[in-house]
Amino acid sequence: MSHIEQTILELINHLVRKHPELSPLIRSIIDSSTVDNKSTPKFTEMVALYKTRNDLYNAMNNYFLNEAPDYLRSHRNYFKINNRGFGEDAFHAMWLTLINEFKPKNMLEIGIYRGQVITLWGLISKFNEFISEIHGISPFSSAGDENSAYIDNLDYLKDTLLSHNYFQLVEPKLLKALSTEPVAKAYIKSKSWDLIYIDGSHDYDVALSDYEISIENLSEGGLLIMDDSSLFTEYKPDNSSFAGHPGPSRIVTERAMLELSFLGGVGHNNVFIKK
Image (cartoon, rainbow, N blue to C red; front, side, top):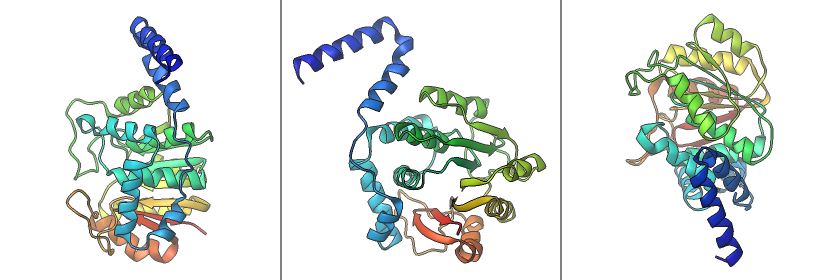
């Protein structure tokens, strides 16, 4: 470290000690100035290079661990602490390569736990300097989720917004509702979406309802990503990964593979484009 760099670091540390409330802002400025300048690979390039699902998953995982910008790993670590989020490291690389390539403006997540995915979307948009509108529909409770463990007395909506504040992000537009409620269906129909991530109930009928209304309101060239949906594919997860649940996996096999263009699968996430 040069003398000038050492002096700057000492000044920053002094400022943080005197004004700890500025720490998040200073961290954000430092992160934005130290983003890895190496170009991010495109999702479709990764798919073309790695021919099998397992090879693609391993490549995404290796990219996350060894080549991805530091802010991506910092974000993942934040959500790993105290089990703030689920998912796998490779998925962070999947989102980075997808969003950087397609730059979707209107993005919707159906089914939110504590905001890991939508804050990641916001960070990727922020650090790569393009504008996106981020939306979410969720009951922000265990309603409709028979597989995840929920914490008693935690306000999940407030917690999601606190994570946005932590990362200095614009608050997303969130609707507190089950995706099958009329208000949620009206919300989905209110826009043409460039990206929809179906991450809600694993019940077949509910997941099918989410899928059908999503593809109806997906823009031409829009992306649909199905979570927990690789159970009936050739993907062979190791002990640290997971292939999915029967409900979403049936929809991918019986509907999405026939009705949309398949771009690629990373673990239990399957990515489609509407053409």
